[in-house]
Length: 237
Image (cartoon, rainbow, N blue to C red):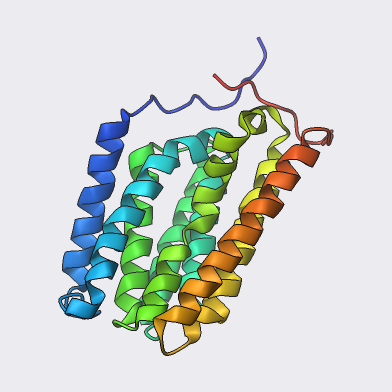
C-alpha cells in the first residue's frame, strides 16, 4: 500500500482552539505584567492584542500542520518567529534559552519522523510568545514587532483560506510562502519595531503584511503549475 505519510492530528473544534489560545494569551499577559508594564493604561491595547494573537495562532496551527506536514517544519517556522523577536526586543537573554527548546523540538520531530500533537506546537507558541512579550520590556514598538513575528505561522493558512487549491500544490510552494512571511516579520523587526514610538512599527506592519500577502498569493497562483519531482505529493485527508 502507498505511504501517505504520518497520520494527521484529529480535528480540534474551533471553540476549543480559541479557548486554548485565549488561556495561553492570558497566562503570557500575567507572566509579563510587570516586566512589560502591561498594567499601564497606554498598554491596554497590548493586553488585548496578545490574547488576540494567541487565539489567531492557536486557530491556525492545525491548518499549518496540515499544509506543512513534514516533521520539523512547523517548529522551524515558529523558530523564525523567535528570530524576528530577537531582532527587535531590548531584552534577549531569554531568547537563547527558548531557541534551545525550539531546536530540540525540531530535532525530535526529525528523528521520530512523526509530527507531535497540536498541543505540543501550541505550547511551543506560548513559550515563544512569552519570550517576545517579556523581552519587549514594555516598549510599544517592540511589542508590535513581537506580535507580528508570528506572521510566518499564520500566512500559509491565510493564503490557503483565500486560495484553497494551495493544499494540493507541491509542498515546497507552501515553504516558500512561509519564507515570505518570515522575511516580512524580519523586515518589520529591524525597521519600525526598533523605533522608540509605536507609529513606525504599525506602519511597518501594514506595509510588510500587505506586500508579503500579495506576493504570497502570487506565489500560490503561479506555484500551482510548478513541479518538484524530488518532493512527492501527499494526499490530504
